Amino acid sequence: MTKRIDSFYQHSTSPVEEVTIQVTCLEDGVVDGGKHVSVIVPLYNEEKNVQSVVEDLEETLIPLGTEYDIILVDDGSTDRTLEIAQAMQSRYHPHVKVLVHDVNKGKTAAMMTGFQHAEGKYVILMDGDGQFRAADIPKMVEKLERGYDVVNGWGKKKEPITKIVPSLIYNGICQRLFSLPVHQFNLGFKAFRREAVRDLYLKKDEHRYILPLLKDKGCTIAEVSVDYLPRLNGKSKYGAMRIPCGIMDMVALKMDLTLGERPFRLFGMISFGMLSVGLLFGLYALYTWLSGAGMLWWNVVLTVAFLLSSVNVLLVGYAVETAKYHR
Image (tube, rainbow, N blue to C red; front, top):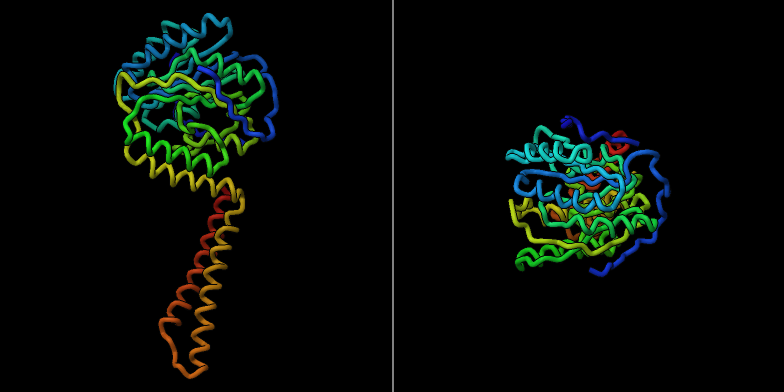
């Protein structure tokens, strides 16, 4: 039966190339009951791809002889995606499950819905655009079996220079900002232990930074190469603003991860710096007046501006920390 999702943000308390982040591992527990592998496929206007994606998954997973389920999350598609997904559900029952957002809420929301309904010990995230092969799932699961909490898929495909350069810049900044040496942060093919994503809360568009967020939780991360194919049907959902918006988002996330529960500290340091500059201008104005050179009014204006600004920044910092504490 197709299940419609009205509320999805339920916040709760090729050779293989490997990159491992040395941090404390999550508990290595086995999920009691449930299926062995859950594959989550977010869908938005993928009517030309959804059938081939599901058939590829079925052809790959059936011979493995393990329990599995395929969770198709239709994120408010306006074409025949939902109709075809429901046909796949009928054809491959009980392996295929369809969840529905009545309106388009974004990829992050679709992922969260899938995570909340995944029953497997291992959870695979796979885009529904037909650019990945299910045949790469076993080697990702093998990494999870070896004890890693997260496996990041990465791959190369022929793209115009206008896409290659921004992607290199974006991934290069991410690598240095989060000290996470993976090739690609935003490729839509990843595998997780269920414990890693069970209590994960993502805000809008934070699916791009799921790796830094899970690293911050203490997950071990490995990386494997996967086939990354050109899109044959449909069109990309990413516009020209993806890179600048992505950079702003990653800087905000870095600040959030670094400052943790105390953003007031950053605002306090900025306020102290502005206060110091204001006092220097004020002392210089006082010195020129006492020495008989007259009052330098531009110094007075700068003094007042910096002092008032330092107070404003301090108050903003207090408001931000208070809001974060009560969130």
